[in-house]
Length: 341
Image 1 (spheres, rainbow, N blue to C red):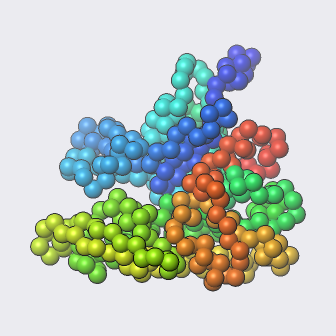
Image 2 (image 1 turned 180 degrees about the vertical axis):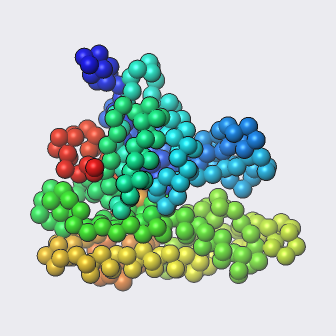
Image 3 (image 1 turned 60 degrees about the vertical axis):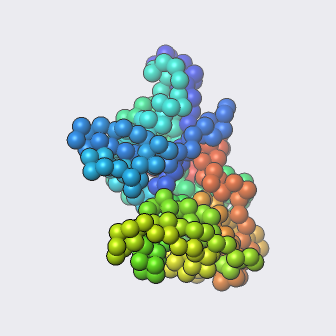
């Protein structure tokens, strides 16, 4: 028992944002030490993993039949237990050096509304990957902590965390979630909407990685002051030949209109179902946007215009959640009420 505690103290404690699109790991000493795509490439004949993370993402849409590049998490939760376990193990091995006896303690953030079965899958994956102890915290709570919101006070704080697979909308007060909604529409759905748009409007097929590049470079939720354009290459649907087209931010705004409106609607519903006193606080304090989706140009303006609220974006929205998860790990006693069973 003594040796277990002794070696445990020597091991690194990790905070992990296990996301549909990207996985991040944080330590108290070094901050964010890993930020990799949640993608695994598998040789189906030999049943072995050949690449994980950044390298595997480059395989998407470019593999021969025997090799599959997959995302083992879907809509923020584990879709393929075995592959997720291998991915987590790979990431942990990458950031932990030294003796295997030094097993880390890990805090992992998960979507609100996650089922008991899904919780168990996350915990068991981390344990089988080498974690000594696993704790869970909800993503919007982690985002609020990461952004430095006064979660302990009797004040309503509204958080909209837009990741790859889910959009988490939550109202937080007194270190508890007063209202939460997890909408399984986020960055990945926008990428798919862009792919469908190109096929329907231009009779052109583009890959997942290209759709994401288009979204990042010229995608917007609100009209921009200056028009943005981009030449996009793909495959002609009819002839099967290479083709390209120049598109504007207006095209992409039209393409992602539906998923963006679903996110706006989720915010509106959250306000309708939140007690009046907390809504008054939110009207005064504003709404926090976090996650990679917060970087979509003009999304803050669109939500502000349609919901009549001040909207602010965290300084580094891609890392808000993992930084908040890290803070709970660093001060477990102070944040003990935010961990979920």
